[in-house]
Image (cartoon, rainbow, N blue to C red; front, side, top):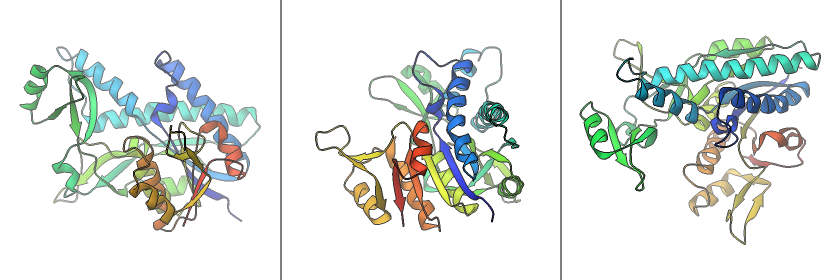
Length: 313
């Protein structure tokens, strides 16, 4: 009987524990820890595809680009995505290989630089909403707007570029990912929500300035692979309603209908838990059986049903 397939989405912030630990060796250390928990899952018989966020890492590339503007060419956003997929994939691959070797497991990991197609007619292109890059003063922001970029004033902290965040439609490298999983590889794919591409009139793929939500891309990847589980790894052990209030309540197992009810009541913040819950709902509506949200260190216990928030049809 073949192993069950899980898509595990790891947050980009999971590689940065705090503001004092942002260097590449710090990020690798955090990656090594998370990969250890995922290796336990693989040891327990799961075939795993790992996706990841890349927000802070793309921010670092854009900042380097800004600082070297007088001397070097800027890095377009789709290439920033490709760069981080390679670098974070390398961290995960190395950590997994070392973990496999230590545990005497005959496994290998591979990273697939993944393009994700979006619809050129997506309404998100009319309303750029995803902030990227550094805070700028008003004069510099207005100067950059002449290049066709969109900037908004961000809560008195300065001006910041915003780009569209369209919905993912197709994982371009799906077949390659499928073959690798079928041949026993642990695959790292669709990093940062995937490199956003659209199809032009000739049917060619064109990279664009956009950011795809990594949880939504992970849900699409999981549904496309017909995975048995979508696991979203985040900063909390369980999801809560009335978060941070005296009546806070941890959720252990909820249905799609209950999750939608909590969304309607405004329990989940747009920049944090909301896309995770929406992604789980999308996966289940497209045929998935179960989704789980927990933090990396509780993955093994959560899979035994001892903790985490489970979302079921």
